[in-house]
Length: 617
Image (cartoon, rainbow, N blue to C red; front, side):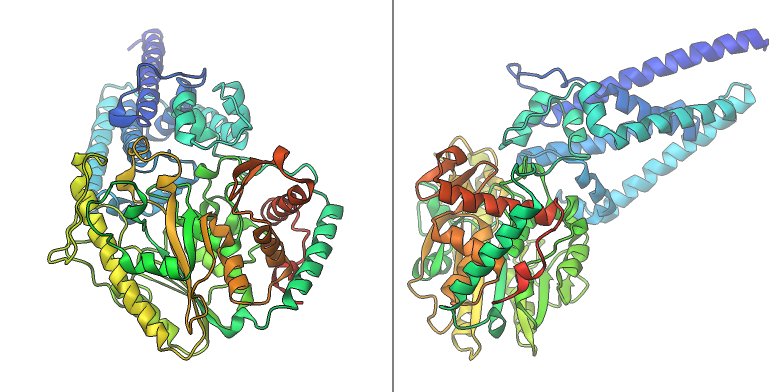
């Protein structure tokens, strides 16, 4: 073949190739955007920002990068399409289950395929088979194309591929080193500084890829305007004195007790939803314990997810609501492992601290986080969890089985704090519990008929949780030890996704919580509704008459002033949501102190000394 003809063919080939890759990239962007909408159907009346259809340049560059390595256009395009199909499917699932989109940090979960597949009821063996077959087919096509290309003497030289590799890699490095610059100037993403209460709703206007890029290097929390070393010094002195005054009326250390922090997966009280149930509650014991002890309802921003975030708030007493976009931040995955400050309730204990979770340890970076904050042991599936019995055809370890492991740990010598994350009532809810003595009567006038069976199965599950909890508390009534048991549901189950118009306001965001203290210490205790989990430990310390550190002195001051939740520019009290501009100067100062402390600990200079969080004066 004459060189001129061959050169012209190569030019035509690359023009056609780039045209095909561009069309393919455009289709990918279209489906990524569709993945945020029910049934992949964009509402005709949906408003779009300029960035909505942008992102083709990034998909195009990634495809060229893969092509430069493989050298075959068909395999490169098919491989990109398969990866993007997986992202489209996963994003649709998360959008429908949790009203959230997949963030950049969550792409790391590809390292835990077994755990991801369990959420969609696909066996790892079947998924592995599909993956192997796909790889073999692509490899076969690759080999065939290479042989044919050499036979007809028409293939892209190594030199050209190296040029494509260097150029595409340089572009990708530049994009991910300065993702916000690329997002603003190329994708036309318009960043807003208002509190984003519904990230998916905004993502449906901005487009998926620009929204994803906004999570690569985000600003999680705005720096408080009055954050300075002098202010930090003032805060340290102020609350050291306050904690000292508080401790004059307290008589013991938390270390003298045994404390349980029990997160009950997806637990809610169906009787809190008007007319949902036509018969009795499935959780009579939990409801009566809430009413007769220290308890109430906890505010959870999430439906069907957010467990790690709520757990983090309980352990640290740091609020997620002060962040720019609290619904798309996961401290464990995003930043907490690298934070300079890892002070938590664990600091109150010299005795052993143990965490139990009857599931994998690979999600949400828990192994690294638990080691950083000072847990002595972490028991999870295939590593310390001995009892794995399940309810009926359920796939999750039952609460009854988990409680056996918990009590075995509790009965060991010198164990002070036990942190428990249950899994029994996690989705999916298509599994049944035969021979259950409770059958809920669901009012399908207020709940979708098509989800009735799922809700039925879920309600039977929390009835089993209620019975397991009753057995547990009865055991503690007999114990000679001083026991504190903090129990809370982390969020509503995903089966309630889509019922927001039926159950308005915060009805789908309030879950039961209580603190049970044996020997009658919690009977007739304080009732607090719509309470942020950041206040659980402060309530425990106050109601148990335990000594506080300077930091917990700050939390106690907020409690004393009626604060139940703290946001970026507001608080919530018995009077409802109150914005900063309407707060008294005295209260605003204390609230600002809290925000400054959280910023200093997580994103600032960590100027506050360690004893601010740990020392009892």
